[in-house]
Length: 198
Image 1 (cartoon, rainbow, N blue to C red):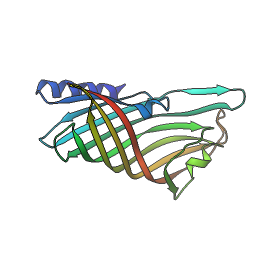
Image 2: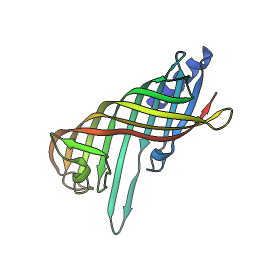
Image 3: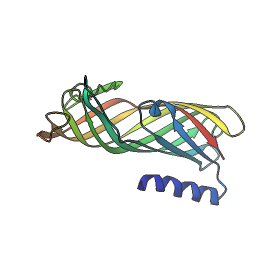
């Protein structure tokens, strides 16, 4: 909730100085049952600052698969440089991300690799992992104008992340079997977003 209020405060501050502001949602992220909200603010003739918040609070249960969850929240700030002008065409960015997760009994199709610790892409199918994560990366994207106030944005980011975790023996029990950390290198963001520009 605090992160959402931060996004709203950023928007109010930007509007008060008559900056160009956009609100957005990543449709690919929405498709993973993770509601998300982004705000992008023009801060220069060729630069913007982007902030995205996503939250997945769900646990799914079925008789055939048991409890499955990929609960998490993430906050992702980003600086963007535009090749022409903000909210139009190609952009390059530097992003950071951080959050918390609680995942069990799911397949994580992570386009990258884990090293120096557990391979979460495989192990989270058989154990529960709970902890924090943080990282950085580089972004490339493109925005298309759909109408006067509407844009479509596609983006991909690659980078590095670290996960600090507690490991549990199963998805429902509290039997902690260890703690540790692991590193990740690969795709750190992927988006197809629809946005409204004020």
